[in-house]
Image (cartoon, rainbow, N blue to C red):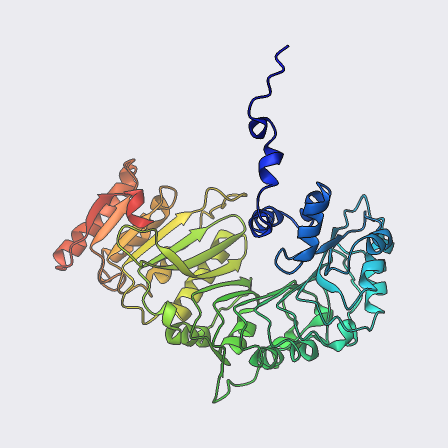
Length: 475
């Protein structure tokens, strides 16, 4: 057996680590501690020196005490220093035990820094709502319920005030007192209100008033669980003469009725907005001129390069893209989505949305229409869809010079293009120069229909060239 240890530092790297000064150790610990809330637990159990270095710099290392429903919180509070508390738990349906640990953490209201509770049981919700203490250190709040009838959060929740809150997420949580709480959250940068239940309905005017004081808000999600009632939809008011400016808002996500969104965006200006995703419940008529006005006065949406219209088994959507630099992937800036399944409803609804909102966009050069084969279920196309519906869809795109059709849609579009070969040859897509089709040649009748359209455009002195699709050209 060889007993020559040679360089002990090579065999025992720990000896090398001992010579590192405290500030270097802190840099290493900081990198390590970023991996999770409780990574520092491992560090303080290595040796006394490491324990001393860690606890001597709690702010530098952003030390937090992780509290869950499976950890003995009362014991933890007795053992560790008074660090900020993170309440983090997901109550699965098969294991909803340990609520007492969560309650024990909530009772340390002046130390709670972050709350994240998913699938919260109604029994725990009721206990939390009974607490009326303020949470002065709270910066992040995320509570989500999957219950059909979750209890209502009272005005006294969080003591009615959250002065240091930066991120707020509520899913399926009725909270009529939300406007009052938001008046105290001047530092809020992220607001996510999703699956808004009927019992927690807030009008567009109320939402705008809530947002008016949030001058630092960068991202806003407002997503309703159900369409509004007829009485609620009938109570619309005319847009105000003066709009509220939201200087920092960068991302806007919405799901609900189109007229609710109309009321909302007619009351705000968002000079910093770079992306919006708007999803509508299905309805018979889409008339959204105020949304069109909002798009036309929002700087980021003024110069789109490309539009995509996609059909799936669950919804249909139109997206606008900008091209920032040649050779770069186009940057999506706006998505308008309608939740419906029937193909004739999809075509009718997206044609109405485009007609109301996609206007006065002279920079729009390319239009791609395709079936989203990645989503399931796939679209079941009706046999009796009228050709005029496809032409109505194309009507707003007067500046488009390149049209791209996916393979599954070419047989549906061809008869509509054949209709244009008659007296309406330049009425739709007047600026069109290139028609991009899949590599596989269409069938005889489809090819004949497209040929008639091409010939008619040539005779009208507005020729169109059929080209093979090149995928990279459009992304």
